[in-house]
Amino acid sequence: MTDRLADFDRTVDDYLAHLSAERGLAAATIRAYRGDLNDYRGHIATGTREPWDRSSDPAVRYLASLTQRGERAPTGLAPSSLRRRAAALKGFYRFAYGEGLIDVDVASHLDLPRQVRRLPDTLDVDQVVRLLEAASVAGERDRALLELLYAAGLRVSEAIGLDREDLSLDGAFVRVIGKGDRERLVPVGDEAIDRLTAWIAGDRTVLLARHHVQPVRGGPLFIGDRGRRLARQQAWAAVTAAAERAGLAGRVSPHTLRHSFATHLLEGGADLRVVQELLGHASISTTQLYTHVTGERIRDVYRRAHPRA
Image 1: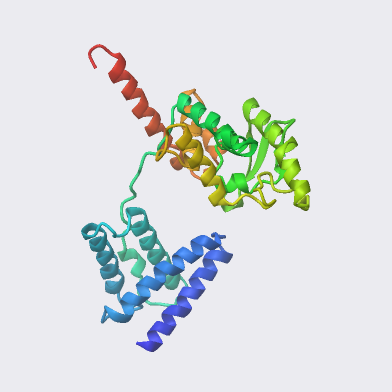
Image 2: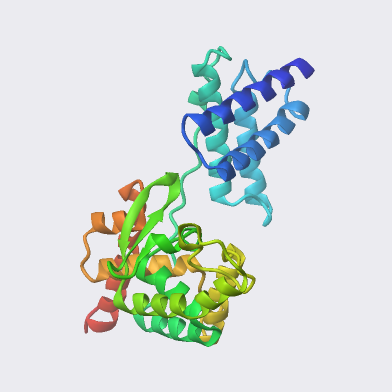
C-alpha cells in the first residue's frame, strides 16, 4: 500500500505541474485541486481494497460517498464543491491514463455531478443609485470604487489590481487583466470618470505623498489609508458598509454590482456578445445566465401589468 500511495503522490505532482505549465491554471486553483486529491488519497489509504490505479471502483465509491455526505448533513459539500472535486479526480485519471501511468481508463467511468445554475442576485437601477450615494459617506475612494465596479462590470480582484496607468480618464476606458490573463478594454461612463478624477486628484494624491508610494505604473489605483494597494477585504467592507447605509444589508457584495451591470445592459438592448466581451467571459454560455435573469424580470412585469396575467 505504501508503494501505491507513493505512486499516487508522484502522479498527483505530475498532474498539477501539467495543469500549471501546460494549461496555465491559477495558483489558487492548483491548491484547490491538490486539496481535493489529498482528500481522495485519504479515502484510498483507509477505505478501499482495490488499487487506485487498477480499478475504477475506488474513485466511483469515493464520489458516491461525497454525494451521500452532502445529502445527509447540512454541513456537507455544496454542489459546486462536489462538482469541482469530481472534475479534479476525472482530470487526474484522464492525465494518468493518457500519459501511460495507469492501464485502466478510470476517467471514462466517472460522471460529473449536474451543474446547478443559480441566478445571480441583482439590484434595480434605483437600488444601485442608493448604494452609490451611500458610498459617498465614507469618502472619495469608496464612491470611486463602487462607481467603477458598476460602470465597468469588474470583478473586485480586477478593480483592486488596477494601476493608475490602466485607467484613461481622457479616453474613458480601463485596461483590465482578467481570468486566464485575458486583457480587455472596458468603457467607463461619465459619472464614474468624474468620481475617479476626484479620487485621483484628491485623497489619493495626499495618501501617495504621505506614504512615499513608489509610482510604478502610476501606483495602485485604489490604495488604503496606509498607502498600500487596497486589499480584497477592504473592498468588500466598503461595499457592505454602503449597502447597510442604503438599507440593502445582506443583499449586496462586490459581485452584485457586476451582475447588475450585465443585467441592466441586456435589459437596455445590448448584444449578448458585447456583454460577454465587457465581462471578460471565455464562453458565451456563462454570459447567457443573465438572459434568464432578464427573462424573469420580463415575466414579473408581465404578471403585474397584464390585466389577465
